[in-house]
Image (cartoon, rainbow, N blue to C red; front, side):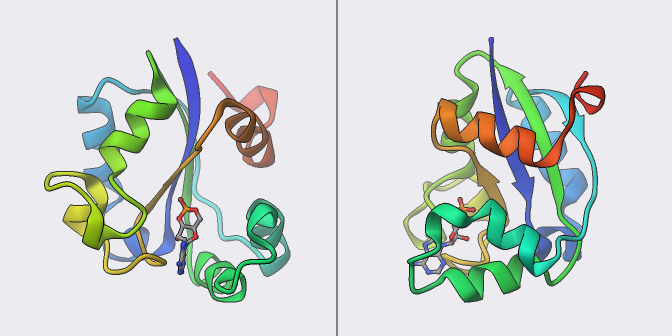
Length: 137
Ligand code: CMP
């Protein structure tokens, strides 16, 4: 069993897609071990995406992530990190496989509905950024 971290982003929450995305993840075999709704400050979004600080899209990305509530989650299943990335689809929905969450719901490379950790070390950092030990089941 492996754990990964995911966020249902502000575009998806605002468009009423939270339930559909959670249901899809459960159908794909992920167990929800932590979940909540939060509205990030700009400083909190910048801290989460610090690895992208030098990228040209950093300011726009962090502003987007603060425009409304988000739903961070910790998910568990076999090969959770790579399986979540398969189910999400490519970062740019234009390149995502038919049937993936981003292909179904995302409008652009930035407003792309869902985040998923890309490696075990980032998953660990991202889980602890949003959840403490008492919030993880
Ligand atoms: P995410 O998986 O959360 O990781 C970093 C985020 O930055 C990514 O999803 C997109 O929302 C955003 N992103 C990545 N590349 C670009 C880009 N070229 N232009 C704008 N936003 C991007």
